[in-house]
Length: 131
Image 1 (cartoon, one colour):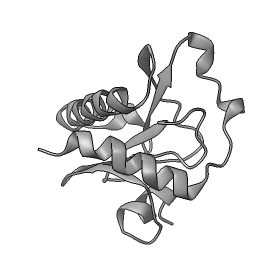
Image 2 (cartoon, rainbow, N blue to C red):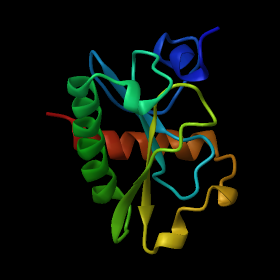
Image 3 (cartoon, rainbow, N blue to C red):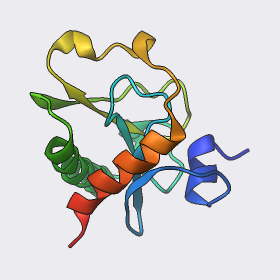
């Protein structure tokens, strides 16, 4: 059975898209820790990040960097933190989180976000990713 992320890639489920190309997709997390919390995924369903081919992993990191820079332009923060946990969904994904302190990366603080607010924020962030 396809993961929730594969279903998003295939258009079966909606997302608040920030970036998309042939191999990767970035979108806002619907249960953010903080506004701007985003996910970057490969379109190919690979469970474990370190099972990715080197070139594909490098591409994923390159997209994460682009998206992080766009988030920084919209969200006031000291840095964009990055984490890969990989247990909750069996599809490689990188969390990008606007942070001030290391304690800001606390997944117990996540909660459902207002879809209208997510749509507005997605438009703002993605505008920084346009050529």
